[in-house]
Amino acid sequence: MKAVHFRPRHPDLAIRCMPASRLIPLIIAVALFMENMDATMIATSLPAIAADIGTSPIALKLALTVYLLSLAIFIPVSGWAADRFGARHVFTAAIVVFMAGSLACAGANSLMGFVGARFLQGMGGAMMTPVGRLVIMRTVEKREFVSAMAWFSIPALMGPISGPPVGGFITTYFSWHWIFLINIPIGIVGIFLALRFVPNLKAMEPRPLDSLGVILVGFATSGLVFGFSVASLGVLPSWAWQAMVVVGAAAAFAYFRHTRRVLHPVVDLSLVKTPSFGLSLGGATLFRIGIGAMPFLLPLMLQLSFGLSPFQSGLVTFTGAAGALLMKFLAQPILKRAGFRPVLVVNTLIGAAFLAIIGFFDEGTPRLLMMSLLLVGGFARSLQFTSVNSLAFADISHERMSHATSLWAAAQQVSLALGVAIGGTFLEISMLRHGGPLTLGDFHFAFFGVALVSALSIFFFLRLPDDAGSEMSGHVVNARSSGLSKLG
Image (tube, rainbow, N blue to C red; front, top):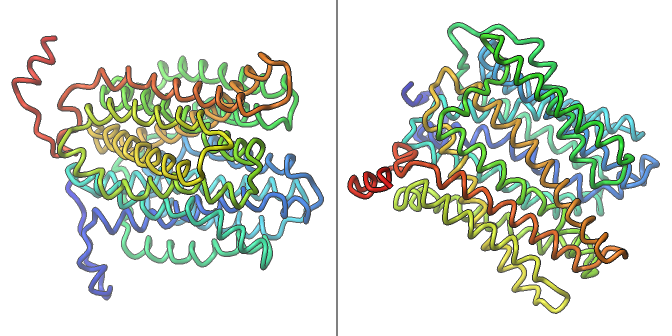
């Protein structure tokens, strides 16, 4: 399918002249910006919310985990819904559901009410990002896809950057309720732009819904995501989260067998046989497990071991997101010059190294040096995810894009939750070694461990062909070196 260029009736000149490779990603990014900013503001405001509704901040973390649970349950069906009802309709409906969940959060006055509202928000979030990515892939030419993903990510990255200070300001000087209410005007803008400029793409012959598959995938992803997420929070006994993980793993195995007997599985696992997708999925999952532990480990280390306040901690950690934002402008020329395979192989080691460097931070490390290293680490992580998020879909046909986005999004949620669990496990192993309370050395051990996990993703990227994703990157592979590589 060729790129879709839009000619609305009465837009302003800037929008009318904007190509689809920028316009569509920026519109879709409105929803992702709202979702990311909401998540980071909630983390900042947990103590105030907990005090107001009469619970503890630890118990309220259950609301964050329930959001991940909702994502895990509803993401797998997002591709089918987009094919059946049209991507624009599903995308705008998802924003409406997210806004409804935001209003419910603002009106909650109990723990269970807040948890239920976050589950509703998760239903909307589960449809927004995968369906939005699907729209981008079906409207943008492959040679423009890396650039489109960069434009898609730039506003989305503003959420983690602006969320902590904005959330802290609103909670301190106004009321925590407003961190949810500001989603309403943002959502209205997103709905207006989507209805005006986003095409309602749908499949010519929608596949039937695999009902049993939906149930099995729901149990699999929710058991794994929820189990791994609560493993390090201490809100449930060990046997409870372990049972959830076992149930999730059993459901995943049952779904794997189920896919062999149905023609149209809700999540098509055969996609991993496509080398660019399968190797990208495996590499991204391992790399993301290490990176996913960082938002859990770093604030704890800064606050518990260094004695920083939440605000001071946020000022240090936000530099990583700032570095990620700056890299989005450089990803396309880097990939065009070097190609996907060399970038992913070398940058895996760079990203893992800057994750391990955090394991050398101590009370005497200058604050400016910490921030500088986190900034460069943010560069590396951003380049890695921009590259792998683009390469994964290089060889996927338009007919299978909805399957691919669902599988990719589900794997992403599982890997992020697994990252938190593995980070917590490394902390516990280190604590058992010395038999005392949590120390700075435990955090160092954990950062070295998760950095090693991220580095292991290099074995997936080494198996990529030299010309992987060349149509997307624009990189021209030397024929002789490519031939020698294949012979070797």
